[in-house]
Image (tube, rainbow, N blue to C red; front, side, top):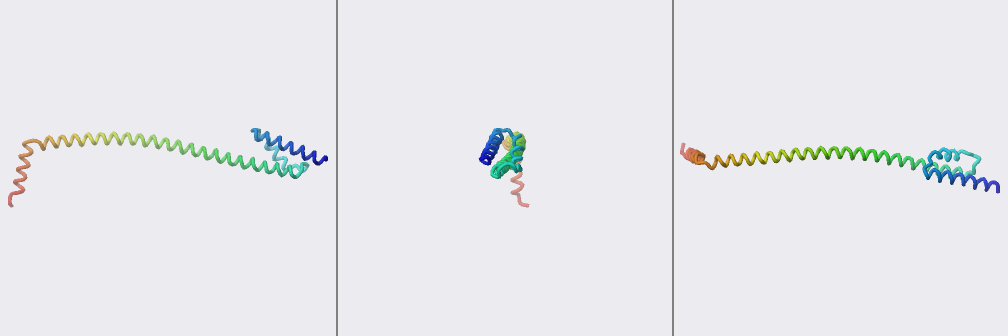
Amino acid sequence: MAEQDSETQALDQLRTLCEAISGGRYEDVDVLLAMTGDLALPDTVRRLAEAFGMMIVRVEARELHLEETLAALKEAQALLEKDNRNLAASNEALSAEVHRLRIDISQRDRAVAEIVDTDQFRAVQAMAKRLRDRPL
């Protein structure tokens, strides 16, 4: 009976520790881990404490991995945002250059049209045709 009371008390202590840890009191993890080596406790309680301790270690490892992944994602996001701003600026500069070139082409086309539509140009063109058509 005393052995059963001892095991019940140890299980209650383990339950209390696990509840405290799950509630955010992580300083109790050391007490939980100490239970794994306490030979005065029943074997079942020690093994449960070890299993809970391993779960805590695995959860902490996953949490650390997730924090590192989140930091890497935030860094990647910052780089992507910077690249996006650079691309937007380049796009704006290229759009302005295309607009300028269109204006230059339009001005050139108007200048050529003004020259081609003159009587003097037609006369030079006719003279060039006669020279080309003339036998050598």
